Image (cartoon, rainbow, N blue to C red; front, side, top):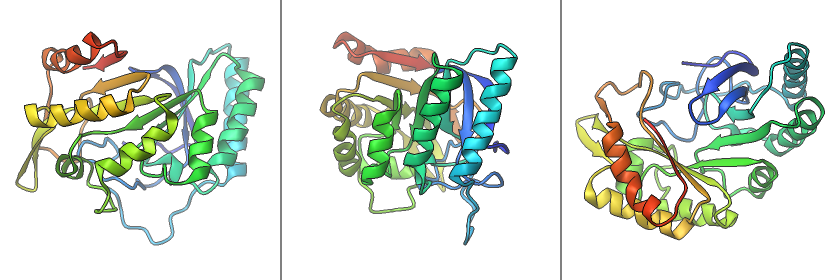
Length: 255
């Protein structure tokens, strides 16, 4: 499932409401620092010179879309950066966010600017600055252990650790939404399950370190590149959320 427009939608997001999407990655294939087994965009494709939209192209496409939607009296809840990979990979990400905020203020000041990111570019000061400008920073941590994170997310940087991701996330002092996909299954003959007692205890420990203002936990909802995955039940998701809710965390469940 790839998005073939720079500005697409609006679509109804089960987590965000009426959302206008903005695509910063190539329109023909996925480009990401992760290769998640559950990603609706499929697997990464090796491309030597990926074609990214320019900052000017993004601004023009977004302005046209926002102008058209205002003329149609369509109200937006959110402008969302997500799509065919990791949006913060774009070299002009900061400038694009600045343009987006200006256009949002002009055309739909009620809308929030949100970024869904896998957290791998938080070592870049320009990305951190850009995310701080946004209304919603929705940042991924799919497991509390290196082994499970690498099995589920298949990071391009095979040396990436959960401790590094936590350190980067701590830059926001809890002012972000932590996003985690829970699943079970198998990949290349190896069992993966981030809902086991051990894995959950490690993830809970990471949550306690980060103390995010909101936690979004969700299950697979569309076709996945790895076929041998199991969708977690609503009851099990509620059980996962319960200890955090009891401690006062704001937890939303998409199941």
